[in-house]
Length: 376
Image (cartoon, rainbow, N blue to C red):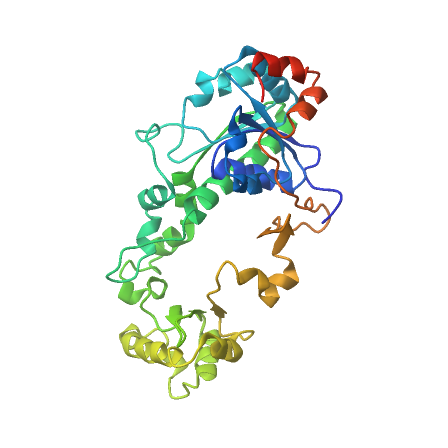
C-alpha cells in the first residue's frame, strides 16, 4: 500500500446506516480520506461484523435529537468536503440536516444521498431491497434460465453496484466540480437508476438488434453450449465463457471434441444437442480434472469457487485480492492506482470508539456532553 493515499486531504462525514452508504464510505477511507462516522448513541450493541464496512474510519456516537450533539455535527460538516447518508427521503430533513440547511451553512460541501428508489418519484417513500430495484430496472429479466425464476447474487448488483458505486462516483464528480465553482451540490444516487445504468450494454445490444430476448437465440441466457455454468462429477461447478471463435475453438480442442466444427458456433439450432453433450462430458469428471485441462488457457474457463476457497486461488493470492484484517479475510482496497495508492486496511472501529478523540479535535468537552446525554 502507498503511504501517499489518493484522498488523504478529503474529509467525509458519514451518517451511519446499512449497506450502500457504509460501503461507499469504506471506499473513501480505503483511498485515504478521513471518514468520520456519526453513529447513534446506543449503537455499541450492534453486531461486531458491521465494523468491517467501517475499516479505516473514525466513529463518534451522537444523539442528534440533542441540541448539543447537533452543534457537534455542524462543526464536523463545516470542516468536511462531503456528507454521505442512506436514509429514506425526509429523515435528514427532520433532523434539521437536510440539503437546504447544510447548503446554507456549508456551501462547498457535497451532499451524497443513496436510496433504493431515489429522492423523488411515486415509490420514493416505500420500502424496498436489492432484489426489488434489480427487478424494476429490467435487469432481473436477463438473469434467469429457461423455465426457471430469475435470480442474482444477493446485494452485489443493486446495493453495491447500483447504489454504493454510483454514490462514490457522484461524490467524487461533485468534489472535483466544487474545486472550480466553490459550490457543493446534492448527489441523488438511486439504486434503481444505478442498476438501469449498469444494464447499458444490454440496451445498446438490443437497439443494435444483436441481443435477443428469446433465450434459445441468446448465448447469455443459459441455452448455449459455450457460455454457462456446468456441473462436474463431484457436484462442483465450472463456468465456460468462450464467446469469440478463437476461444471457442480452443475450448473444443481441450475438451477433445475434434469432430465439432468451430465455424458452426452460432448455429443456434445445433445448441441443444451440443450443450447436452458438453454437459455430460463435464459431468463425467471432477472439478480438479477440468481445472487441470482448462485453467490457464484461452478456453475462457474458471471454477466456481466458494467464498472460502477464492482467497486461496493462486491468481487472487498473487494479486493480493484479499487481505487479512485482524484475523478476518476481507477484499483488499480497489482500484489500484500506480502512484497514489490505498491505505493499508485495518479493523473497523467499535461504534463511538473515537468519540473523545474527535470531540477534542474539534474543541468540545466530551465529559460535559456525555453528562448531558448528547454523546455516547
